[in-house]
Structure formats: C-alpha cells, structure tokens
Amino acid sequence: MNLLLDEMISNADPSQVAGLSRFFKTGPGQYGEGDVFLGIKVPVTRTVVKKCWQACSFEDIRECLASRYHEARLAGLLALVQIFSHSKKAPGRQKACVDLYLENTGSINNWDLVDLSCYPLLGAWLLDKDRSLLYDLARNGRTIWEQRIGIVSTMTFIRNGELDDTFAIADILLHHPHDLIHKAVGWLLREAGKRDKARLTSWLTEDIMENDASIPRLRTMPRTMLRYAIEKFPEDERLKFLKR
Image (tube, rainbow, N blue to C red; front, side, top):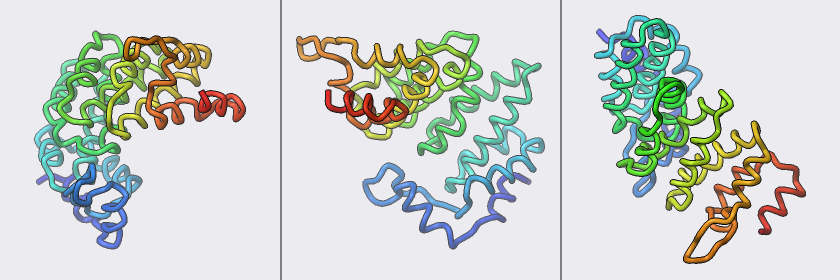
C-alpha cells in the first residue's frame, strides 16, 4: 500500500483538470505535451505530503515518480525533500535521497517539479561539496528540465551568500533557445542581485566576445532573461538597461 499515492488520488478534483492542463501547456507541441492531471492544487498536495511523508519508503516515492499523474510526481518529490531535510544527522540517507532524485530526472518534466524540489534537495546537498554536477546538467542536460535543475539548484547557494555558481551557470545558459530557461536564469540572477546589486550590474554590463566583437553581456542575452534579472531595479534604471 502506498499511502501517499492513494491519498493523492483520493483528492482528485476533475473540475480543476482542464485549467491545470492549460496552465502547464499540455497541448500538442507545447512543453508539457501529454501530461495528465488529477486536478490538485499545490497547497493541497503539500497538505497530503505533510500527512504522509513519514510513512513513505523509497519504493513508494519511486512509484509516485513513475505515475502518469503530474501531481503524484510532485508529491513524490516533495516527500523526498522532506525525508532529505529530516535526515541531517544521517548523511548516508541524504545521499540515497539525492541518488534517487538524480535517477529519476526523466520524471521531473515540468517547471514546477524542478523549482519546488531541486534547490532544497540537490542544492542543499551540494552546499559543502563539489558543484560540477550542476555545470554538467546545465551544459549537457538531456532535457530543458535537467538544464533548469542546473541553474535553479543554485538558489540554496544564493541564500547562503554564495553567488559565483549562479553567474557562472548563467553564462553557460546565456544563449539557450528556450524561454523557460531564459526565465529561470533571469530569476536566479534577480535573486543574486538582491544580495549584491553591484555585482549583477557589473556582470550585465561586462564586455564579452560575441561574433569576434566585444559587447556588453546585456546586449547579447535574451530580452526575457534581462527583464527578469532587472525586475527589482528602480524604474528609471531598469528602462536604461532595456534601452541598451
């Protein structure tokens, strides 16, 4: 018996399915094409996870991650985060959580699944370890979701005052073709800028080589990425950046 999965299915709300399917772009050719929903909003999923996570085995979580239902996969990820965060005195168990996470990145196939799981788990695990894994995901990830994990996981570093990896991985993804990566990179740059605005400003205006010419980085990055990055700047300053 998988209590978590059973509880999620019992909370299905068919009246919400169509709206969630549109929101997460499940139509033909869209990034969430073919995903299936139970109709459960995130606060309800969190309530279920809070109730059930302590009863979850790794096999239960694997079953959730293998589910066709989007919300069941999210519940499995959130339960895994809970197990990880409550295992600080058991590094072996934390590593098992990380290994399970990395073995199932194929099931982490939408932006909410990435953003609600990667930094409190993978980012937290790497806080005092080598971080080359994130660079490899950003550079060589098999999907945009693995690449998004590479940048969003740095949120934990930012919150601990460490900004180097965010800026370095942003450079790896600077010319990525997908707007979901542009938004993620811009978001993390904005968060880094909240801690050190001068550094973000310097990074944006720094000259880099582009087509054998030296131009400011902000002139070569996607406009969506720039908009997200400078969202918290004063209006007059933000407009100056956009005009450049």
